[in-house]
Length: 277
Image (tube, rainbow, N blue to C red; front, side):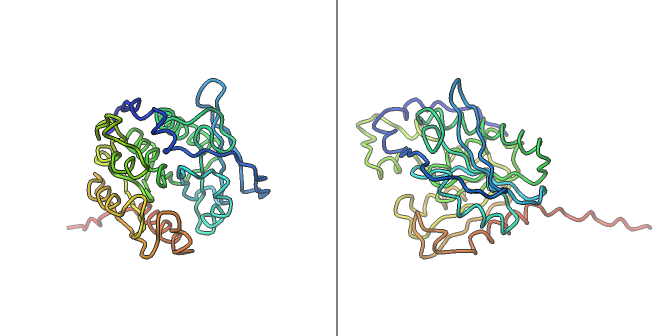
């Protein structure tokens, strides 16, 4: 099932945008590896998003379209991309407006619309480069909003969904970040609609969440897993980890778990043998 776009204009106000987005430029030189590709995604007149692809040599490897957290940029994943590659997965990370080398300024409305454009542009690029592997959309923290927008509106274009440290409800998160939601006149129906969206997701889904997440409590992850409409869904809780150190705590196991999930969605049931009577 495909959902229509929601109206996010009540979130596009200064007191919310200033705590939701923390853009910064990328002042580091890009990696020189042949497997790393910097790519531009046009999203509006004169505005492009910066993206960085960490590609495996195997063109049949799985491809992960990745949306990062609010204080991150794609350059922060330069050391992480190769770890995906070691597990035979390509990482295609996309910045938001105003982040890294991207143009424009970030808003919720733009972020949601840009996620759909990014998916379509990356699918074209994968096809043009004979990249035939499965396409998984993944979002971490704030990026869970982009990933759920894609999964609920473009389900036919992806093979699976991964949410890391994602949030289920909008108002509790905004309150944690210091927004006076009552004064702002906000209702949950003015938010990201994550529960409504994940109920529509039918593709295999994995939720990753830290046990000790103090920013987005683990209850958000369990709600997302419970409400997910997919028949194949799982949750991986990371003991001893917080919101921003899951990979530090898990190390190589983090990538192995993601690879195992992708291997499972790649399995096909063997056809039943028909006996001759």
